[in-house]
Image (tube, rainbow, N blue to C red; front, side, top):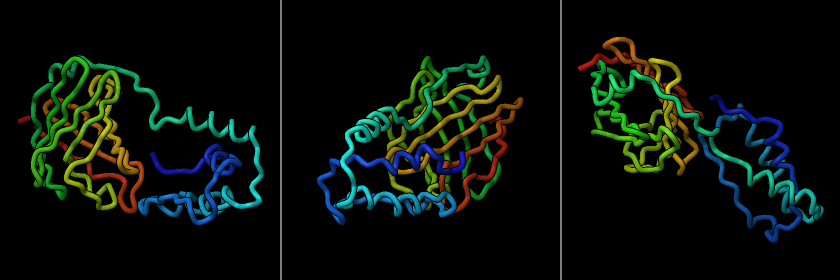
Length: 219
């Protein structure tokens, strides 16, 4: 998904609560440097955010309630629609060896249980796991490498909320949301006989949004 600014978002920024006790200079709105200028986000912030705390901002209880209702209904991701494939049982706990690549990824494996999938990736930094919810997103920690997609951020350990679902008979798609940052990765594994096509992309970055797709072979 490419970053964009839709009209409802601009409407949200332009709402005035009228009840803020903060004066100009006491409110902070962090902006990630990985948000590209083409998104238009920064222009909206600089246009509307300071005005929320200006002396001329009118008190409007109706707008305040509208804002409260809007923010209460916001959610990071659409609801997970569980979908399984009989192929999951055939590929579970198997390992695919990756060809030599710029990201130093050596192998990938998936282990399916009743309501979870453990995704394991080995690369030049070590072995990394993500616990993926199949019925609901699962929150946990991971050491997964991702600096090239994450504006070169690479903490030793990250909080991640992960979910996965079968798009079709041979395609398993995961969403990894790194909740301490702005990054949300989409990881797609497509199984083609003894091969597995591995693709990973991110919602926002200052450079590439996609890693090179790899074709692994069953070990």
